Amino acid sequence: MTGTDPHADVRSTLKLATQASSAYERPDLAERADRLLAQVGDPNVQVVVVGEFKQGKSSLINALVNAKICPVDDDIATAVPTVLRHGEEKRAYAVIHPVTDGPVPDDAEERRPIPFDHVPAYATEMGQIDPNIVVKGVEIDLPRKLLAQGLILVDTPGVGGLGSAHATAALGALSVADAALFVSDASQEYTRAEMDFLSQAQDLCPSVICLMTKTDFYPDWRRVLEINRGHLDRLGFDAPIITVSSMLRAEAVRRNDRELNQESGFPELVRMLTNDIVAGANNRERARSREAVIDICDQLSSQFEAELSALNDPEKANELVSQLEEAKSRADRLRGQVAKWSTTLSDGVGDLTSDIDFDFRQRMRRITQEGDAAIENSDPLDTWAEFEPWLVNRVSHEVVANYRYLTERSANLSLDVAGHFEVDGQALVGTLDVHNPTDVLEGVHVEPTVDLSETTMGKKGMTVLRGSYSGMFMFTILGGMAATVVPPLGLLATAAPAIGLVMGRGALKDEKSRQLTKRRGEAKNSMRRYCDEVSFQVNKDSRDTLRRVQRQLRDYYSTRAEELHKSTTDALKAANEAAKIGQSERGSRIRDIEAELGRIRQLRETAVGLQTEVKGPAPAAAGGAA
Image (cartoon, rainbow, N blue to C red; front, top):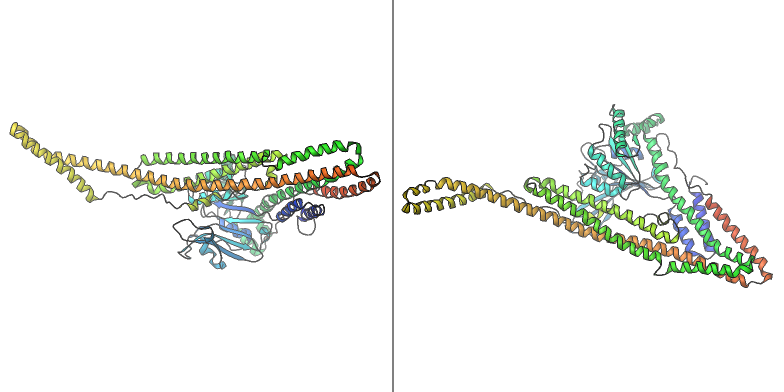
């Protein structure tokens, strides 16, 4: 490694691999090396900061980057995600689209530059910018060393409990994030909602770090820390809890006080972000580059090794040619439309499409069953205000879970396809093209609302009056008719008012029952309309996602098959030509080949010797994030 670039060795090795591939007329291998070269040292590691409202998430991010970026106020809260990434200059943008009752067109979303002092207005729930636009997020470019290695920090709105819309959005972000910082202050132990959220977060995100904030404000924070560690142990959650104080960090930066900065807890957090999260992503890229260069060298050398074997032992040239023809035949089978890997991919995507659809239908079926039971056991007039957000957020959680299942199954399919190439498919393909699942819910424009109105007093009175009138009229007439036959039965007419009141009350009860049944029916219909619309959108998007994954795997392994075919074809051609070389030219050609193999072997040894575990830069005393 040279200079201050920790990846200089990988860059130089990949450049040599590109040059060697081009020199040996293998543009396909050179292109692979170039692609990896563009990714080295630029992992774009996304770390999502999540937690309940008013736990100090925004203050934490401001202290990390040593800048007042995310709005902090006791009376307002972050309403949209705020993304911080490295930039040579300080810039801010708002991601917006116009207000619309229908689906938002793809080209309607705009990334609008905004002044820095307008960031709070766009990012918080108090922002009143323009009633004609919807703010989806805020993006900020900041020249900070902590962000320069590819770290991207995302400040999210408070989750507001497991069933909230913000919690669903946070879980959706976690499903595509590289790591998460779960923030809870030292005022109290983890709540049940926080533990439920953590339980889901550890299944969605590969790395979760728990942070306890505001330790300077709560003297009893050590006791709370021990209680929280016990909660995590019972959950089976092997995650560290780092205690931090944003106030102490800010004061340490102001004084340039190393000891106070250490007390704030931020050096440990910065060290974990740089050495474990960012460096971990960089190391995975380095390892992928290392294995790719080794494979490129093996393919480049195969041609010369075949020719050298034929030249050194002409008597076994025919046997060598037969072996190479068999290898070429295997490579040809990998290229064909009926190749086993292609069949595995096609069948796997077909099975996966069916399984993902069935999984989502099952989830939606459970929701409607639970919803039906809840509606039948209550009056929507009283419970709809609670039922509606439950429905929206429960559906959102099931969408996230379904996409997580899709991602896991797609990764397994990649490994199955890779088995035909006898390589580690996960390391080769890298990240599958699966997007944030909560984005698809923005396309749902059927609100689960129902027009619920209680019967007015006037209508109730008319119902009672109609029932009473019918009863009084009937028994008055019957009493008069009966009196002409049996005079004592004429007393029925005197009881008519009382009987009318009883019948009026019964009519009112029947009307209430009819109205309740009607409200329940409307509530169920509204729930099903919403679920049907979500299913329509999710089914379309999941199929699109699977097609993207299929194309991604198909293109990658098609390229891989072409590389292997080219290598075996060149090796076979070289062996055949070697068998035709005369004795006088044999010695000179052997020396040339050995020299070429020596160069390739040297490049391979350089790749083998690459260090694949490089730690990030150590943070400075108080201004390490700056």
